[in-house]
Image 1: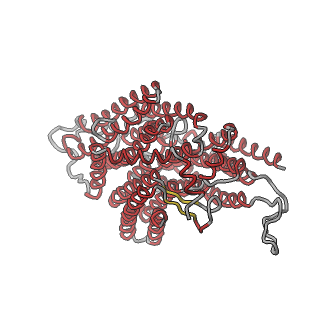
Image 2: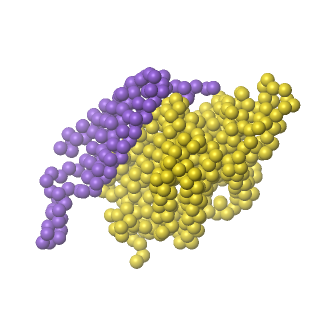
Image 3: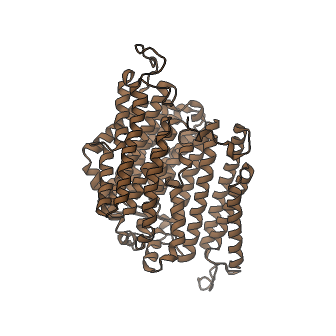
Length: 499
Length: 117
């Protein structure tokens, strides 16, 4: 129980300490990294405990559910909290040298940890309104982080990000209002229980669709994703890596939670829509990436496309498919955050992220090339890296569920993803840099600090490890998936706890 | 009463979305404000409106009066108003900064990040 609270309290306290030390950047840096490390340790313990006991439930203020605020972690939540700890630590260490002191003085680390608090809170919320509040905490910190540099790009991207996400919050709030009006409860377990008692699918359709749109905007699925490629390439690299790793996945988490828990008995009402959205998300994302020549823009569009695979897992809805979606989410968080961090290394080395202007990195920076190669080709789904197993699981579930059209789309999109990654590889790493003689190192003197390479190396090693020894993670995903598809136990654990 | 408020909520939503789709920054702000008020009203009305029976327990029996108003939507809407207030203030500040950076109040000129380099 204390571990459940720790995943919110640790970032909160860290943020407060950083807030108090805004004028002392050195202290902020140390506290920021230490807080992230502490969070990682506590989240690993939390995952261990959920694996042992199934669910960890906490009723705030001892008010029994459904009257109090419930915090609950099952295996899925706990593994998301755990992976958040990993990404938070990697980005915090990376920020040490990458984020300029001026931003740290503007409370960068405080906002960083408030964002993590919102993300973790959303993962363990057991109450719909509570989930809304955590979303807002997460969003508001992300708005500030995105625009804190004050450059024109950031402000423009920030406006789009802000307006579309505010609109989705409003839809979410309206959905909450309608659900409360219809069934008179907001506790997630209680909503699930009440909805499983009713036969009338149309009763809940309106709120199900409002939640789909609200979470869909946050998860950046088709047709709600346009804010993402407009904004993710603008802020400091450490910030965009954090966003790329975590924010959309909170939306995916909320989608999976809502559709496995609330609408479990009426899943066929939304299944066709979800199947279509999954396919459309994959295709539009990957095609959007194909025309771009800025590394982070390509990667942003790929986030959209990869979200499609996760939604595909959810839409198929079998035990294997949901396990695939969870596996995919965890793999994707590591790989995508890493790719953004490595894009930052490339930018630091070359001074630009425009593929047309850079080249020859394979010759002059072989280490960096290898570092890019691992996550990029994991994203493309090359065996034996983690992306292959993720895609394999989802596609196999699709074949078992006889969704042949969607499987074809998924396979084609996999090829196009590989094409994009090859494009970055060929342009940035293989091609000779233009207008320079090929014998002198154009990037000499641009050393990459160890605090920036270390997180990338660590995340790349995790990708390799998850690929070579994918079984433990797959077993974890399967456990989480079985738990998700058995909402009765969830409901029972929250509403009728053993004394 | 609920019917009137429902019509009002619908109108607010329509007006808010209309404003959001306009090209001027100022109208975007107005749109966000209208929409957030519409959502607040929707949450407030969600449990039905009950006039003048607050949920005060009778001091002798310790029970709430019959047919009392549901206090939860009121608590929810208070939280939602505060959050909405913060978000609106932040949007105004951000749009002001963006306006100063772009030097134009037409949202269509906010297209630098969408160009293919």
